[in-house]
Every structure is written in structure tokens, then in C-alpha cells.
Image 1 (cartoon, one colour):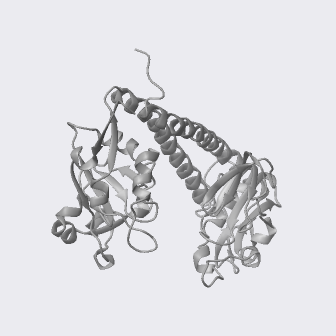
Image 2 (cartoon, one colour; image 1 turned 135 degrees about the vertical axis):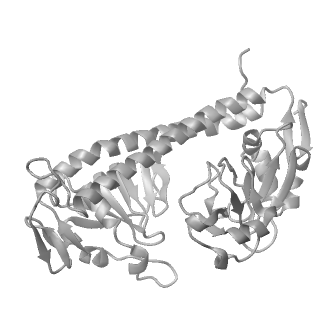
Image 3 (tube, helix red, strand yellow; image 1 turned 180 degrees about the vertical axis):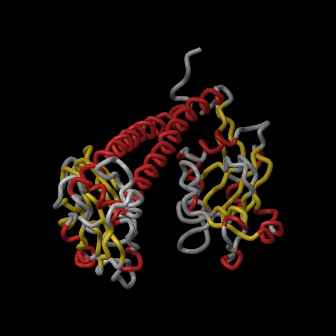
Length: 395
């Protein structure tokens, strides 16, 4: 460590401040009339998650200048996963709630390089060892300002940053492609099964081309004449997940309500399936087409009709399981509730045509996700080695 100089963070940046702290629900408004608000829940440590952002009134935004964000500010989680850091890269005016905001000094260190330091064990341990406050634990601006950053002046930090950012940009591009492909698949589902504009025998949109519609009493709406209504029980068999703790590490993903938990050496089922949480985040329905294992708080399904898994996936996602939940303290779902849900049951030829249309999109999604796993593993492996000088570049 003789080449390292240990510098307090506040000597490397312009300012460390905290976003607004307090209850601001009464200032929430719609996107068209407000300014973007980012919270701890929007910080992933791998880029800001814009899927569940809030918006606050213009007046609140103007009155709270201290918590306003500038492009390239570093946002750090104050509670929960303390120290998780992301860079605000957008040009859109925004404000932060209950997060630490670090304004970078570009003449001393880039915001990207600074974020990489936050991922080093040396810095991470400082944060975790200096968490005070409630049981959940909260960090403050002084604790972040006083963090010791190990700077090695013999390292080519510019090359390190470029190398890591190339990997991250590839991951980001893959994620954007995944998002677009998922939107395309959902649009096709909506067009075919909500608007009933699937191709007729002539390849024209069924409903607008005069396809016969009949009133269905169960669904309380018109559906194509040759289709029927029924319960999901006609489409799927629901199975229970199992404990995975005693399984050895392998390449088979284990799914919980929050996504993949770990990888094991055995599979519970191999094939297309729709995974539905039994407890926890009930609306996180997942489609898989690979060997997998599910935890005991997760249902998995077997299809009763050929080429129906993707149709079932999008149909199940139409229901708000949070409102249907039977739990008290912990949100819960039962197989009987899922089986009883009413749905359209299309003609088998339409199911086959929909599957052939959407399945290639999901093949590409799966390819991109697998590539991202490999890129993320490579990045996580290289980051500490590069930042500690254990791996260097050939001149």
C-alpha cells in the first residue's frame, strides 16, 4: 500500500449535502405538472431505476434548492443498503429525497471513478461500520465527507474508468434492448387479446375487418365468436416451490418473488412456466423457458395447452394480486384464487400464431440477460483488481 495516498472524500469533491428529509406526500403531483423526485428506492448501485419515480410540485422544487440535483451528482443511499451509489446522468431537473448528494469536482476526480471507489471493500466497510440512528441505520453527510479514499497515483485511472464503463455501457444497451423487446411483446398481446385485432384468415385485423363479436356474460364484454371464457385452471396447473438451502452451487437459477436468489445444481422443472409469488412481492410475475428452481414461497406452473405460456404470462399480469392478497402482515396468494380468475380462452390456432410471433423476442431477451450476467461478473471481478493495482495495462 506504499503507493497509496489516503484522502478524505470532502477534499476530492465540491460539496456533500443531503436531499430533503421528511414527509412530502402532499407535494406529489403528476408528471406533466411536476419535477422528478428520486428516493433511496430508485438507487440500485447499477444505475438509477426510473420505473417507480415520483414527481413533486414546481413550488416545492423551487423552495428547496439544496436538494436539487445537477447532472453527474453522485447519489448515495442513507438507509437500507447504505452506501449504494448511483450517478444522476439526466438533463431533466430533479430533486432527491432522503439521500446523500455528492457534487463532484471534475478537476480532481470524475463522478464515475468516485462511484467505483464506493464499490471497494475498503470504502464499503467504512460506511457499514459507521452507520448510526435507528434499527434500520442511517448515514449522514459528515460520515460520507470523512470517508477515506485510497488514491494510487501510479495507476492509470483514466484507462480503468474507460474499461469499466465500456462493460457498463454494453450492459446498459442490453437492458435498453430488453426493455424495448418486452414493450413490443406486450403491445402485440394488447393488440391481439385486448383489442381483438389479431390477424384473420386474410391477415387483416380481426375486429376492424368485420370479425364477428359476441357478448360474453362471464367476462361482461364482447369476445370473438369462436373464443370462449373460462378460469385460469383450464390453462395451467399450479405447483409449489421447494426449499433450496441444501442444494449445491451450480448453474440453475433459483427464483423468489424478487427474482433470482442464487444458482444451484438441480432443477425443479424444465420448460416454459409462469412463476407467481405466493408471498412477498405478489405482482412480480415471471416468465421462464429454462431449467429452474423456485423457493417455497413461489408457485410455478405447467401449461395445459400447447403454445400458451406467453399468453398466460401476459394474462396473469393483468390482475393486481396485491389487491387480491389474503395475507395479514405478509401479502399472500393462494392457488385457489389464481385458478378462479376469469379469462378469455382463444382459439388454439391463435395461441400458436401468437407464440410464434412473440417467442423469438423472448429468445433475444434471454440471450441479452445471459450476456449481461457474464458482463456483470466480469466487471465485478475486474473492478477491485484494477482499482487496487493488482491488474494493470500494457503500455
